Length: 519
Image (cartoon, rainbow, N blue to C red; front, side, top):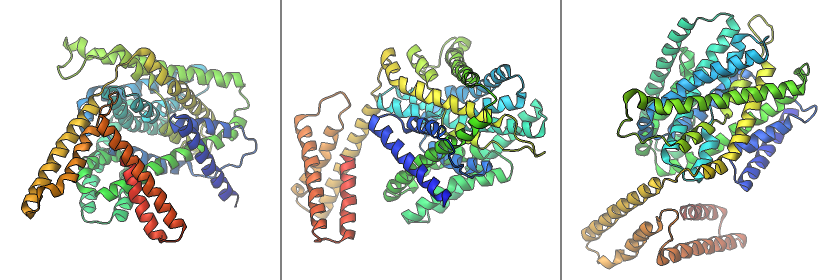
């Protein structure tokens, strides 16, 4: 019964924090990290029993798969060089720098344990950054690089994390052996992910039911991760590869109904998993604070501040040279690559917020070694991980909008322009299809005039941000809103007076929801 009450408390906390984030218009991970920190100060809070080894299996596959599924393969390929340099080189540099910093701060910490912390905090989480950037209409290339980096560095960071854990558990480490194994498990994971992606694509084409399709999609990341890990290759890279491949084919094999349903399911699942991990770390923190009582508060805060500063500074020290190095070596950048702007590079450097992947990795640390002894400095690693996440999410996340305005990073309206061109092309195709069908049916041409006018309005309504709508288009928009609201009020009235059944009410309500969302 106590466990049920604790689960209910966590759900209510997640709902409250989600509302706060929405009300004050900032990314919900920031609200979750603040809420998790407050939970840590509640005395005698019951511990939530969980197996650390299960955390990674539950949390990471869907989070990585959704990110890969939504990644633009075209944009990813176009920016593969900066993404690779950030996702691999920066992860290694951060792991080494943070590990060295911890070793210098706390000399008793073994090197392998220090590098465990470095690997945990090495991959930034792009959720908060891209949420803010998408609202500010920042150039697409910045968002693409950050999203691509976050996708790949989660995988590379977790691979290094597992090698560091293995070094702690076995007490031995060979750089040559680790490098060979890294290549093997990486290539093996990618191969498994690509193969299973095509298997699931073939299965998906034969389903034909949106509910079964959604359940199948939810099972893909878990099945891929478990299959890869069972043959001792990288499960995270397998999930990323499966998501990238399936995302490429999704527009063809997925129905509109399934897409709408799956989008809601994925968003809900991501919010639940984020809430679960942040709440769990908050509950753990109360116990962690007790076990760290041998250290003073000043020492813990000082160590956390130093580790956070190292993680931030290493990113800046890496971003600038890497951006200009190809030009220095080749004499000039490639023609299809724009020159990096200093303001844009500073934004990329500042977007180093850590999130759910680092938290899940910290919670998944083994409680004991094979000998039965406690995992060395586990509580200190969990505390420092949460400290880095809190400082980067809250400090960097909340300051990002004002920083972007201060740097006057130019807005890029290419996405809106592209959408306008595509809408015009789609409308032209639709009008041609209408004329062809009207002619084939032998119907009077004026019968289709209302539909032609409605399609023409789509072009007028697709006005780029910052421009005024045409008077007629603006009036049509307001009329559509008014009509939809009136329909909803009448539907509710008919339902409350028992003139229609619940089934009819819900069906028509769903139609109105889609109309309102479209507007």
